[in-house]
Length: 286
Image (cartoon, rainbow, N blue to C red):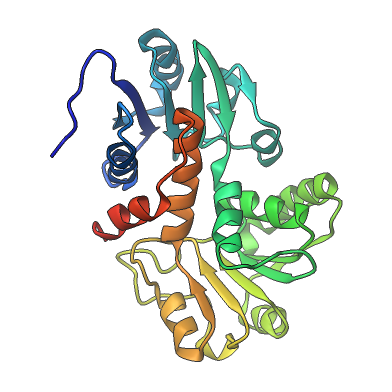
């Protein structure tokens, strides 16, 4: 049964384009219901040209906060009043908190990723991490792992390799931790994974509907590795299924989705997030 909505109900939401596919409304509204928080979460499709008006609308309507998704994570930054240091370092915002008209941007992708590893007692310090892809999620994960002392190798396709090298160089300086960037091909991947402790797929390869695709041959995976795929649809990608077949510890993208949402929930409400309830709400839709 849906909770009643009144003039006292606080509004949170999602801005992006598209937003119709998002699981975030189900996740957040399940959390509000579980905690008896008088909030509601709504998706708002915002095209790029309307982003400044949408951000002004957050202030004008007193909307409590929003998640930010593609294509606005970078473009929204100069429209805000304040950025948390982590979001500023990553160069992307995925959560906004409205405190009486003062808009502060956060990046909960990085902290959500770390929470999902801590849940499994994995400490990055000194561990060898291999990251596939150099986009926005990769940047957040790279910064967090580098700050925690992991040894990082990023593999990226040749077309954008120089751009990823520049980004990695900036992250490396901020975290004071060396990061290697090499071309993504079979030989480089095989060598990188030979002694890796954790593999992270931060690309969209394997995402629905292309569920039979994977960048990694099953023979490259080892039982003692952690294999983490940021994709959550399907819940188990080919990479995750291959990892399970060889006995590796496999983590799907649902964990990242839920944890970044849980941190956003806590920023908006000040209430401890019911993580298991949020995870179940997402899983039922996949």
